[in-house]
Figure (cartoon, rainbow, N blue to C red):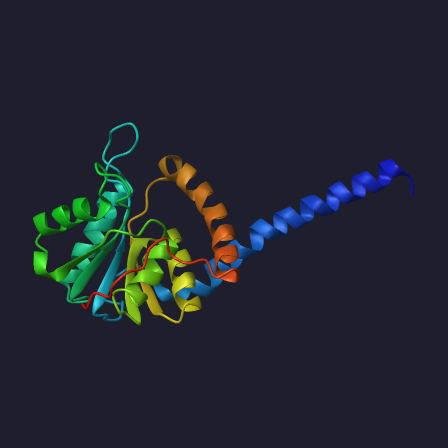
Length: 212
């Protein structure tokens, strides 16, 4: 076999392996977690704590982020329907002028959730951090995760791998055009998740425990 044919064969196999490396983690996440997500609040089982995964309130262009709006609405609905007693809001607070948990808490309170039913996790820099900290810091062995379905599936996969019983309540998703960039990013986030779990990636911060 000449060098040119060997090179073509190597490139072909490399492409196949790359596709499999991207495709398999996404299929594993989707099929293993899908049956644990719920679209209707009257069907989801009760958990003491709902873990609301943070996101920015406003887009880069300054518009209200629909992912944020729909997650807040979903969390309020779960709480008011008695499906959770407390909300653990986990998000990014890496900069002085950027505080996802406080922003979400303020909007939850505005929509009728009592402040004493809300706990804040300021070190939820990534989904992995939020999930692990819900157990290690806030003592939850069973949680209801609140986010969009694609995000819930990844979060549930992490939770189950870490020995946490988790279900997800699906906040309303956004349209295809608006959500295209986020959905593409999710494909690679699932690949990274698999490697993080394999290599036992830990949260950036842990700290003292907080009882809910």
